[in-house]
Amino acid sequence: MDQPIGVIDSGVGGLTVASELMRQLPKEQLIYLGDTLRCPYGPRPKEEVIQYTMEMVDFLLNRNIKMLVVACNTATAFTLDLLRSRLTIPVIGVIQPGARAAIKITNNKRIGVIGTEGTINSKAYPLALQDINSTIRVNDLACPRFVPLVEEGILSGPEAHRVVYESLKPLKEKNHIDTLILGCTHYPLLKDIIQEVMGNHIQIISSGEETAREVSTILSYHKKLYNGDKEPNHQFYTTGHLAVFDRIAKLWLNQPISMIENAVIGVN
Amino acid sequence: MDQPIGVIDSGVGGLTVASELMRQLPKEQLIYLGDTLRCPYGPRPKEEVIQYTMEMVDFLLNRNIKMLVVACNTATAFTLDLLRSRLTIPVIGVIQPGARAAIKITNNKRIGVIGTEGTINSKAYPLALQDINSTIRVNDLACPRFVPLVEEGILSGPEAHRVVYESLKPLKEKNHIDTLILGCTHYPLLKDIIQEVMGNHIQIISSGEETAREVSTILSYHKKLYNGDKEPNHQFYTTGHLAVFDRIAKLWLNQPISMIENAVIGVN
Image (cartoon, rainbow over all chains, first blue to last red; front, side):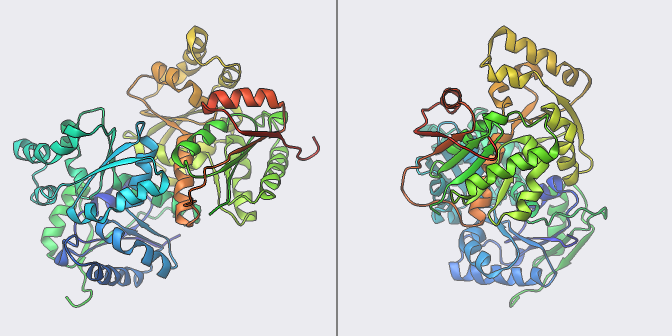
């Protein structure tokens, strides 16, 4: 179907999901909306996250999307069920794909989850995991220093290594997980260091990769995959500074963006 | 939902898919039907495969399944679209999940596929892969000696090693694949030897694991996952010899089967 896939995020983190969608589904066209102006959603009350998310969704529904990807863990935790009951198009969040991939991969049924304080406090991952398999043991840990690190572009070197090492110490010391879910869309940019700190015996799940895989599954199931031969023309919108978003997007997507514009949503 | 998942296969191969379903979705109840009497389907004409498959499907629909898994590559290649158009419950085959997982994992976009002659000749995997990404290069190879080896229980030792080595030689020599799809539900039982022969740099995709993952995705999406606390009571049916099926099932599932019965379907 010749309609775009809509991707929403509170800011730039969802670009890691967009990047994987572009890699795994290279024929599909994306419309990405990052609410950079009101980012982060993590510390906001649930009602506010719902309101902001619905404003983003309205913006994309007006642009005729065939599917919605909620590429933000906080927004997924608070709005996924609501969106699925209200929208007639398929809606996918980032939490369940990561949970299912971890269940597929784990051998000892001990799964670690790292994320922002909002996501970890919501218990969305333990609930999603144990809903499927109640014998899974989950060790979760908030890593509040990771997002600032990534947004400042510190993705390697001694400082990044030190922050990751100090943050993950509790998870590394006391537990025997064999699988670790990166429960925040910023974290894949630190994946190499996280792998190094945790050790090569730990299998790391990136929600972006897994979400893109499930977008493929659901689109295929609903016969909505694009099968024409037009090159996709991705569109990016941000509620914040164009230049800042543009710089990060180029870097994270590893390619220039052809179309980027400001989006006016809600009261901003 | 308190209804079983139906799994059909031309014989015992689909037990590797059932095994993964039991591991990844331990709360779900399965009804498995293996048409061992008329196995293999691979060399049969398309119309016959369709007829036999429809007979299996009718048997399971009468047992009130909530979802159908076609755990047989040949039956998937020939009947998936038909079944999806006719049935009101979700239907999943084994080909697309393996294809999607390979696309997620590959770095160099060169994917190998091994399967029976029927599956390889159908070109179902290259079609599924290139439908999603037309720049993927596929090297497929029929390995007709693998199924007899597995059915005779020769899963390790020098003979198994020799057959796997000789069979995979053409794939190993001339190509530079980084990902290999086991496009036959028997092959996961030879996975360790295949990995050894191909080398550790090759990532091996088992359709059973990936299909179970997508069953989870689709059931969850349709809000059909079982969330009660009854222990599942799996049921196995075969059109062939009970004792033979029972012996293989215990071995492959690594646990005894509580309920196994003969199924009478079609004209047999």
